Amino acid sequence: MLFNNKTVFISGASRGIGKAIALKLASYGANIVIAAKSTTENSKLGGTIYTAAKEIEAAGGKALAVQTDVRNEEQIANAVKQTIETFGGVDIVINNASAIQLTNTAQTEAKRFDLMHSVNVRGSFLVVQHFLPYLQKGNNPHILTLSPPVNLISKWLSPHIAYTMSKFNMSMMALAWAEEFKNFGIASNALWPQTTIDTAAVRNLLGGETLANMSRTPQIIADAAFYILSKQNLEYTGNTFIDEIVLAKEGITNFDKYAVVPGAKLYTDLFL
Image 1 (cartoon, helix red, strand yellow):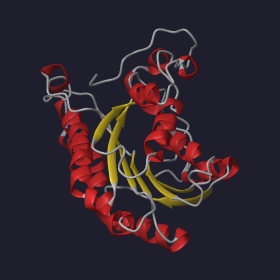
Image 2: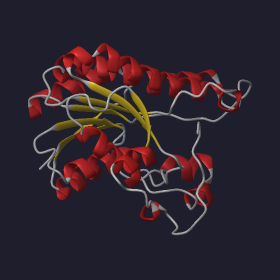
Image 3: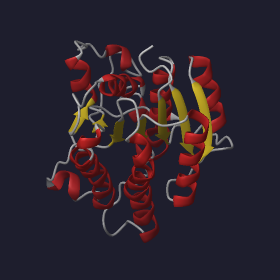
């Protein structure tokens, strides 16, 4: 199998997009490290690192659940240690954990600003930094960051500048790593959806069931990630991909199966 015995670290993998990617790669034989905070069930969010591990193993992969808050460097270091001790190395690192609040300058409290930058920017940076020595030894190593193309127009800057800065910083890191690590053979890309994705954030923070019903399932991101991570010898590196474009390159142009509500009008995601 394509990902047989390859080890994949995914932050925020207990639910949503992170878990969907984990299940997709597990079905092809991957070892999955589920690094997230949730160890007890939350009715509004659903899922824990332990329930995700059971699903991953049922899908055909091996799972390691490690409680990890990426704001805490000691917890990141512990997750790296457990990954290496359990699986002997790492081949893919996916920066999926993210915090969101769509508020303007006046309405963004310092603690929310700090949260978004601590998780989205600092957390992603430190995860890659701590895994870098092991990625250099990996089999066709990849870094994949869930963040958008950098689009410096006021439409995306002014309504929620704190969140926008944090996500654009993630994308800039993805592009920087592609250049910085190319001599190590490590590919680095960013990936973002064309439409909103039915996740807990969409249902609880952004638009409720109405927006969820105008969205696609996380499976479209999982499928796009699968194709990006399948590429060999830096064929895909230094890109800020959109899911539809990745799938179109593979000859997949009918996306109907990904709609939460078949035939519904879909809502275009932020930054596009």
